[in-house]
Amino acid sequence: MAKRFKFRLDTVLKIRKQREDQRKRVVADRLRQISQVREQMAAIDRQIGDEMRAIRRAQSPGTIDIQQAMRHRHWLGHLHKTALEAGARLRFLEARLAQERAVLAEAVKQRRILAKLKEQQWERYRQEADKRELAASDEMATVRYVFSRPEQAVPV
Image (cartoon, rainbow, N blue to C red; front, top):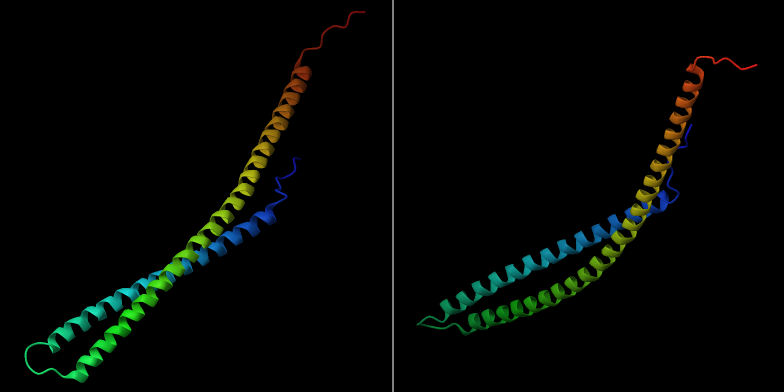
């Protein structure tokens, strides 16, 4: 009976697959964070637009409330500062994402190396098993032939 195929580095392959999956989760989490920051930036941009329209309405002909104008300008300054901070955070997250993608690519590469080795060993195992099977069938055919021949007279 032929022994079953056993890849000796199967445990290492499983560990590398787990590492790859963990790196994928890190990249997905980073992408989610980037998406949230982009949504925050879009919301801030909408708020800035709303505030600019409010300032224009407040400056329409007629009386100008100085206190209200100062509050609008202060809030607008705060929104611009928040937008700059969000932009800096976005650049930071994108830089981290690039690093994490590089680590993920290396993890994928390491896993693929072992997967390829396993595939090659499996193919070698299959070829050897096919050779053994062919040799066994050849031997069986030879035995059948020898025993199925009519007895020839033995010269005395």
